[in-house]
Amino acid sequence: MASPTIKRRRLAATLRELREQADLTLEEVAERLGLARSTLSRIENARASARPPVVRALLAVYEVHGPEAEAIVQIAKDASQRGWWYSYRDVIPDWFQTFVGFEAEASLIQTYEAQIVPGLLQTEEYARAMLGLAWQKLPTDEVERRLKARLGRHQILDGDKLVEYHVVLSEAALRCQVGTPEVMRDQMARLVDAAERRQAMIQVLPFAAGPLASSYGPFVVLDFPSAEDPPVGYVEHLTGGLLLEDPAEIQRYRVAFNHQCAAALSLDDSIGLIAEVARDAG
Image (cartoon, rainbow, N blue to C red; front, side):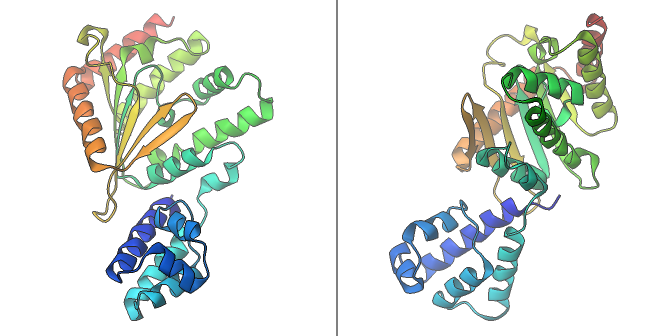
């Protein structure tokens, strides 16, 4: 599950820092190497990969040589690899591919969902029902490819990589009917199983908590094993998704998540409510 996405961001930050230390502008470096300024800007903003030969040329301009240069070139090689999701690029938009890349490297995932079960915990039939609702006019084979891509993300919970996954779900997400009653029962069973197997810490924000605690839209905060890689936030809207890297913004979401945890049921009581919802599903 090694992700090139976080390597690309680390490379971008390193190259930008080296250029600034060399007291050079984007225009000056681009002119020296015969690159478009926009190309160099995209590399420094992690919007584009930099091939190892380009990185070597940049390092020569910045007068970085020897082991330090080779270490940076190795990051460029790692960043140029393709994640498993690349084969689904026809059905996964670029902005979501970037999020999936970050998600694959996270050591801590904090998620709040207001209306549905989050993708990492969805059963196949629940996910198929959700995709059917969202993409009613798409051919069946395309919906199935989107389904396979969604299920592919489950590797981070099923594999050997240690990740702490903490979920706060609104009670509405449990009671919102998706698919048949059988689909809902199986989905609730999946949540209980994930909690019992320690794949996820699941807390439910009950209706009794009132509107304030559940007034946020869904969001995710990702932390990574290395201090070199700052946290990332993610929010979705009607036409896409937004990655957040500003520390102040991410801190606001982290505080919101902590407030929700405090207002939510305990882990044991949450599982009890999920089991109750499963029984109500008939």
